[in-house]
Image (cartoon, rainbow, N blue to C red; front, side, top):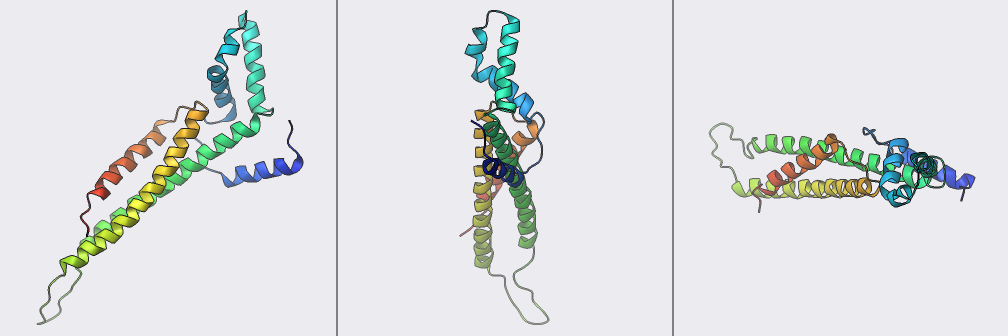
Length: 185
């Protein structure tokens, strides 16, 4: 089944929209090679000789690199890259927002000038913390969703994620624990 020109144009546009940073090993050739080795192992193991196995495997790999399976493989690779970029952006944004919120908590809610007396309103700080906490939890949930989809897609194509992606999961979990412990009303 070949793609019509308009389908190919749509796939090209989709790839452009799903741009993201490259991850080591996340390119069609090594992914297809590993995918075929795992998913079609039984068929490969039926071969009588090593040469027959190598030829069959090469045909299967070409199916995913240049044949009808290309759209599937490229689509999943592009999605993995896009979800990685989105999760990374969310986590970087979250870290900056948390740092800003922490800094703003050190600024007094009341400033006394001259002889006037005033006192800080502790309820104001608790309400402000509650608002910030809800914003942070919303960002965390979005990042978790992106990372979950990234992991699901990586498992679909049997791609072992590099440590940089796994570090994002660890970082997000650590931030989520800290945010959950913020006192709020």
